[in-house]
Image: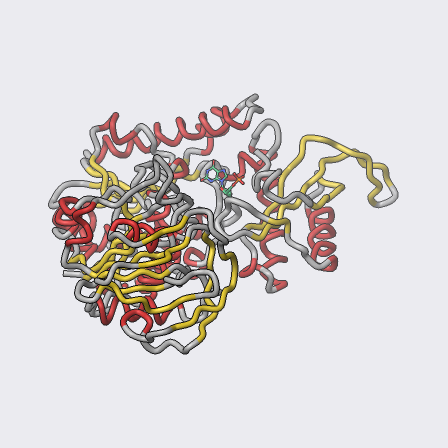
Length: 512
Ligand code: XMP
């Protein structure tokens, strides 16, 4: 059974990073509720060998009336336990240590004096740069604990129980500013929790195929292939498990990017031992969008049209299961662990209930870059593995105003030029997204000695880590110039190109 470290999320900003750091050590890690009980851990033990718990940081004080507390029985479990920041204070408070609220806090890089380089601090130097963000402070610990480190303001900056495997550090080893953060986690997972550190993607692929086989058996399953990495990877994994009993449906909405349907067909048709179907639904989508200008109405109609197409295939093949490419971050929203949401851009919301489909999500425990590793191992082409995000409603939300086959053609051409030039410039890997938007306004221009009155294209090129916030990218003028010149030369309907200089917030990345 795979070793696992559970991270109890007390609302810390960096909680996600903790699970990432553990996984980087080839140990499986999951984020769970702060209210996790020993019974929950036992339940999790059916899937994984739980070897340790990390109690995350959080914004509260242990003295706040409503502050989240740990189930008392957790500290009696025979597991490695590591408290970070609020987790450190919480353990101190629960074990009878002295925590002072509202003292002089520490923020940013702080010098920690390692008094005893043992246990989780083994291998650290006498003085370490660590990253702090706290106002409450642990002043004393009962004699069952030894103090391992202090700072100028915090007498108990790290501790360990003399007999049990309970540890705490006031700082954040998960952020890169703590220089030897990785070493602390390594000590914890290897020496304290005795994890083997053998969680690798090959194992994941094998066990995931087995799980799908077991769940679906000889029944039929269906998956909506969007062309993105998640659904493509889920499709290949499921295909390996159940072969032709999986039907992968790619819907050509007429709103895809240039050559995209062809790429998907080439990638999947006759490959991976699954039943691939491309459905040409362009007419259905354009007629659903006729005369519609409101962005939300566009989304709704696209979703409905998609469901109709998908429903048809699901009924035809008698599907009983729906495979989805949901990944780990889709499942967790800050503060509400395991919030289960069907990704809106899979466009199948409402469908499982209606058709009585059971859901299988082979990637539900993986982060995006882990999905990329799996996708490469499964031989998916780089065009899919390294694809930048593309919204489910496709080019429709990049046409401001009515969507017609004509406006879709214009934006598809412009998008393709942006893509080619940005790739050519070598800037693509550092960017979150780069695309064009077709504006409904016409302006006056002069081309070939004649006055023109034509459309405007806006360019949106942004940097972002997760799409939640974004900066417009500082693209060199010569690259912008090439894009602008090509668009006005190659697309007769366009005579002006503008660059969007808005960060998110206040703007969103897409214009609709
Ligand atoms: P916004 O425009 O909200 O976009 O700043 C953030 C990220 O989400 C993508 N996006 C969508 N993806 N369906 C999707 O699947 C949608 O309706 C949708 N709207 C925006 C957007 O491309 C960006 O990466």
